[in-house]
Image 1: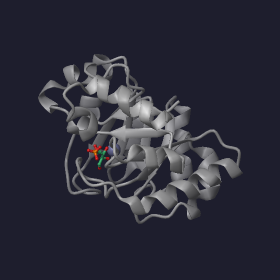
Image 2: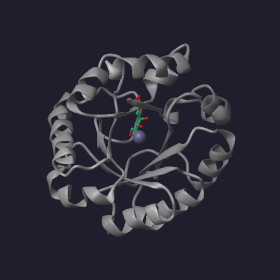
Image 3: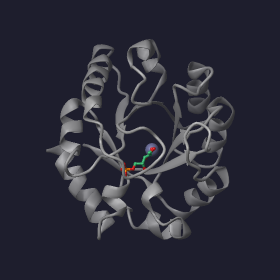
Image 4: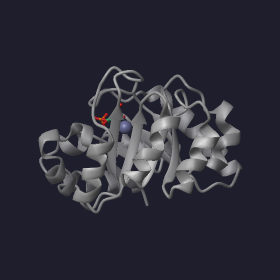
Length: 216
Ligand code: DX5
Ligand code: ZN
């Protein structure tokens, strides 16, 4: 079954606990950490993740859009994240980092910006629990879905099958009622949705509707 991860980037940051409760029933809560260096935007860090993990039973899927994830990612596991995603473009030692995240008890995940190909990372896939393919340039919610990423999603799904791996394939950026079916058809099974969930009148219902669409 498809997993839907609402992104709190589109939520009201002054009411994070309530906004997290508004999507209980979602598989994971997607938390976008931005440092104003790796991406031109600044969001939140370890103390807020720690508070959020106490405020909701939904596991946290932390997407680190930061420089030096080798140094910071383990702290997000300690803060309560169930899954930690670092960017391939920022990690100095991705294999060591993935192993460290797993050893600390979280799922290890790696993200690729739109211009980063999957092929150089084929041999790393067994070290990961999830691969995130960005379907917008990271940094902001509410951007238009990049259709040109569909072949990369398809190729990645083929590599996962070829190696007989269990890892999840996540898409993030512009995922909505009008794009989720194409992503699912290309092979994604974990869907991040910010504006499509928090922009809806009933966010919990939006999660159910997206999941039903992805499951076809
Ligand atoms: C963008 C973030 C996304 C963002 C998605 O850099 O990584 O998680 O919240 O927002 P939507 O779903 O509105 O494109
Ligand atoms: Zn994200």
